Length: 306
Image (cartoon, rainbow, N blue to C red; front, side, top):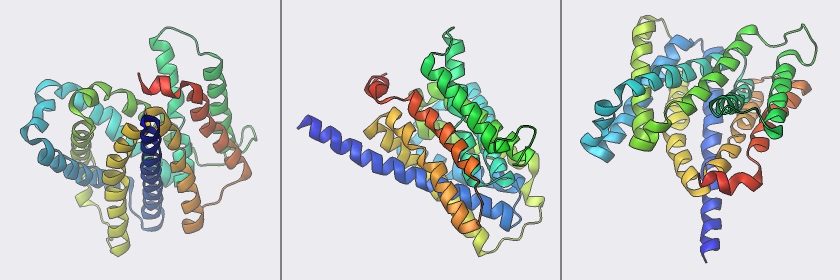
């Protein structure tokens, strides 16, 4: 009976995580649509997205926890600010900049290189060299990025330099986003750490870029796009993914995030007409395979209990 219940939880969690990843992929394409088709700039989009999403999550936190939701400010304000600036803000700005300079599919694939940065950090922290599996993953990530950027032709850059730059920046940012808030999340919960970080990052970018001074044509398509990015790209998948992690375990959940770039690529190609070369596909397979190599099935149960 226990095994049956466990399998049911895994199945339920799998459906929840996959749905969250599909939402994330779709919201990325909406970001591409707004920046490439509606003239929305990143300095306008990201500050507003962070402020509204952060505000909603903070309100949710107060409803659930009351004054306890403020405890993170009393004990770990400095760590929260570091996460808000170098984790949340850097991650969101680089992600949408990468999408604007390339397309949602390519941006989300390059984002997956973050697992290599995390692996290298772990090796340095533990004062050890990468093992065979980790070395293979590193090589595949480098080959994948090379194929996506050059289509296998040395000295030829087939994607924009800005797209490659922001894509790699986003991979680094995602690794920081993953590593910095671990203690905050363990102590105060993901809703508190993420909600406050989004709101702080949004306020900082509002002050830095002053988006209210920018001339932006807001029509129904822009409004719908913002709703998708804020609700379906932040609030819903955030809550769903956390619930899915509880049911399936973090390792299985992280492996399923491969659905996000696949979703983004398919929707971007069918809706916005983004083109993908055979080398883009091969490069994407190389990059995404690193997640499976670093999360082999025989280690799933062990890792999920750590």
